[in-house]
Amino acid sequence: MTTHTYYVTTPIYYVNDTPHVGHAYTTILADALTRYQRLLGREAFLLTGVDEHGQKVARTAEAHGISPQAQADRTVVRFLRLWERLGIAYDDFIRTTEPRHVRVVQDALRVLYERGDIYRGAYTGRYCVPCERFLADGELADGRCPDCGRAVERIREEAYFFRQSRYQDWLREHIEHNPGFIRPAFRRNETLGFLRKPLRDLCISRPVSRLSWGIALPFDPAYVCYVWFDALLNYVSGAGYGYDAARFERCWPADCHLIGKDILTTHTVYWPCILRALDLPLPRSIVAHGWWLVEGEKVSKSKGNAVDPFELVARLGVDAFRYLLCADLTPGNDGTFSPERLVERYHADLAGGYGNLVSRVLSLVHRYCDARVPTVNRDETQHLGVHTAIHSAVACVPGAVDELRLDTVCAQVRALVDCCNRCLAEQRPWEEANAAQRPRVVRAVLDGVLAATVLLLPIAPDTATRVLTLLGVPAADWDLGALQDAARGLHAEATVGEPLVLFPRVK
Ligand code: MSP
Image (cartoon, rainbow, N blue to C red; front, side, top):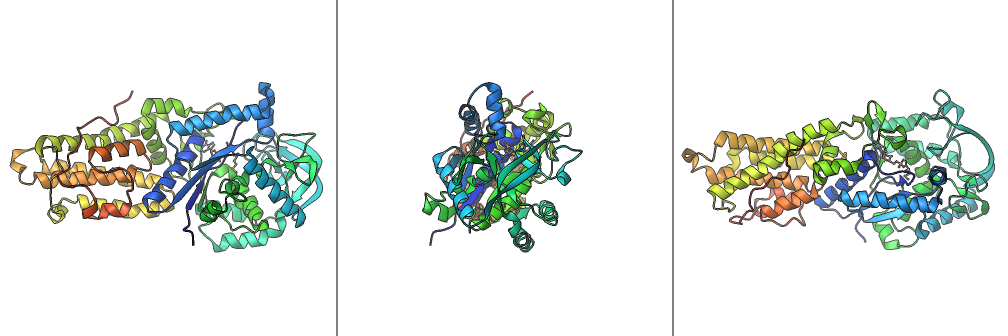
């Protein structure tokens, strides 16, 4: 039997515009989650990618006077560049124009059509182009799109429909019996509320006469596939469905589809119904985070308030940027994006907190311990409280990671750093009068720094790797259990590196 790989996905991003801090956030969270799973001893796989078809991309291309493919080709580079800059270690990157994906979509369409789960009918109603969504009258907010607030268009056309209505009761029961399927719980309630009204079949076609930029329906070339039906299937095409059976068996069902709250219905209603119709198991969880807001509005290019991640990374450094996004927002809730607050936190948590502690303890080791990790029996350091703090921080991580509460993990690191600083302030190992205690105090604080660093590996990988090297331990193959085990931590008498400034102060 193959062991299951913990499979994490991000939404695939539209290539109509350059990435902003909202896209960066989802992807950083997913990357850190994947790395935490590895730290917890699991195999893990991260998929991200881009959503290239649909009216939104076609219209942007037209406005730029280029083909949709050229629009996609030039925008995908910006995402790839950003992910590289942000240290996103994805295992695969899917583009929906790739043949491996197109084949999966066409096969799925064919199977569902042959089974009678896709049928021909007529659609009359409203459509929101930016969101690529059909909207019933009851769904409109003051006559506008309930999600983006923009004007909707009235359309009537012959179309193909996915018979998802037949799965409504099954889906409601699945959600009721699996509390962890949609998280957080209030989002689950939102979907259950949505499912209290009759579920309408989903229009999955666009006439080529109106929109040609899409995957052709295999049973009617006069139509292309609706972009959401196409896009959702990336989660299986990216996992090898239909062409890499071994990967698919390892990865599917996905463990966590990480999404923003704006795409809850497509993921928690359409997607499970599509999977059910294809006889595929459902993902274990769909986790929706909130939005970054500026002056109460969602950060987005179209609102003109987009924050450029490259700029912030240039100012603060990549690891600080990753840490600050993870620490500052409780996933689930919205948060106000404020560069001033991030800089404040940068100084408190990183420059003055963790960074300062690392340089402080390395200085002590160099000055008083001959640059070596002191050999100390762990029983002799218990009274200092650092090992108790390590224990409680490490114990809290699996649960926090499972709930995607990386802000909680960051708070644990802060608590550990505070505990180490308190220990130094109380024990004053630099004073001659305390020379006898010195090796114990320095060692306990070094152990605390090691634990904080390992906990930070998934969020701030470059910095943490650098610190582990300074501490004389390898950065690869850490697992959380090793932190609780005195025999597997620091190597006694190993030489430590010179103190350094990890997070310089910024203006
Ligand atoms: N292409 C679809 C998703 C298809 S998934 C099968 C899409 N793309 S998107 O580019 O518009 O946005 C994708 C995601 O970016 C959102 O769901 C969300 O995760 C993230 N964010 C975009 N703006 C955001 C904020 N202001 N704040 C936080 N995240 C936001 O929707």
